Amino acid sequence: MAEENQTMTSEFLLLGFSDLRALQQPLFSLVLLVYLITLLGNSVIIFLTQASPGLHSPMYFFLRHLSVVEFLYTTDIVPRTLADLTTSRPQTISFWGCAAQMYFFIVLGISECCLLTAMAYDRYAAICQPLHYSTLMNPRACAAMVGTSWIMGIITATTHSSLIFTLPFPRRPIIPHFLCDILPVLRLASAGKHRSEISVMTATVVFIMIPFSLIVTSYARILRAILAMASTQSRHKVFSTCSSHLLVVSLFFGTASITYIRPQAGSSVTTDRILSLFYTVVTPMFNPIIYTLRNKEVTEALKHMLRRWVP
View (cartoon, rainbow, N blue to C red):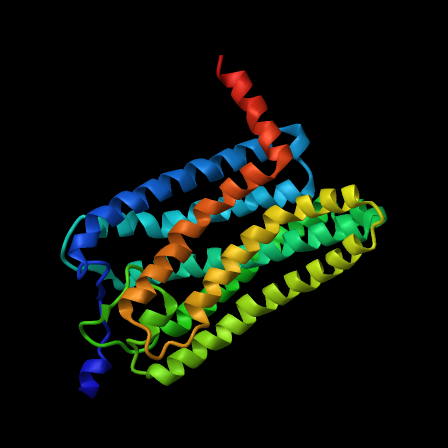
């Protein structure tokens, strides 16, 4: 058994949803629909924030990059998931294919954490430091924040992937998941379940809770500034500029926390897959919807674009 565990594997077997045959066709239709909506919605956001002069502020600069991340994030996962849903048998994925999927999954996930934090700081600077806003959020500073977000994602993904995929795996490793996520792959390694969960919890604290804490700190100061305003109309106007970002943050960090921080003991494979499906596939669909429906400037830019294109 020890010799088997030390063997270098060439591929993994992804269980996917092959054990839930009755749900495969409905899931395929649902995932495909959500994926198309996600691609369309984020493409619209990217185009609007680039083409509309009224959407060239730092807030929409970050939003454009957030949409790029969401576009790539779902594309890293969904096409493979759709292909696997067309067959009732578990599908193989090569060792390097699994490593690549996890690598980009981590890069884009961490980059999104950092971008959401930068967007919270932008709202803090606009509301609490209005006289210094143009200095604090100048184009160079915004570009540096976006660049740092990508660098953090790349460093984290490189470190984690290198550590995980140099561990010994069984000869016939079966991943009870539809993607090469960190925890399911770590559980296969000979390092053991306890050590695996400690690694995931450490990464979760650093890369989910710290950005979330910074966001909460920013909004605590924003809330204090809002409460200090004498005019109810001013309060409503300021809060409306933050509501879209607050909803997106709640969705992202809420589903991430449920997926990675909740106790793993007693959790079923099916529950893990459904939660991950919502976190990786459904949540990215809501971001462009929220920013389009709840943001007046984006809505007006979309209407203007439609009036130009639709006779």
